[in-house]
Image (cartoon, rainbow, N blue to C red; front, side, top):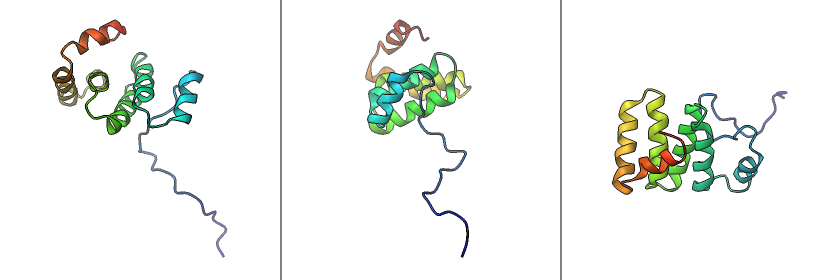
Length: 115
């Protein structure tokens, strides 16, 4: 008999998943309670976007889009994160879709302190 333990398979190391937000206990608890909630994921992504943790922001925004594909907030936020990480084509596509849904979305994000 093998001594290897049998349990749930671990995701590959390269898999990028939505993740906890560091030291924000409110958002971390919200993620535990409602892990797929678009509004919680959007908030978590913004928490990652502001300090420049772009890969985590993109993962959270992408997870939110899996739930609500036509969210101007989520698309614009992911567009900013993609732009800052050097993905101009992805950024342009996200931002164009966001503007088509909500023309003033850039001003909304400027109000959050993110441009």
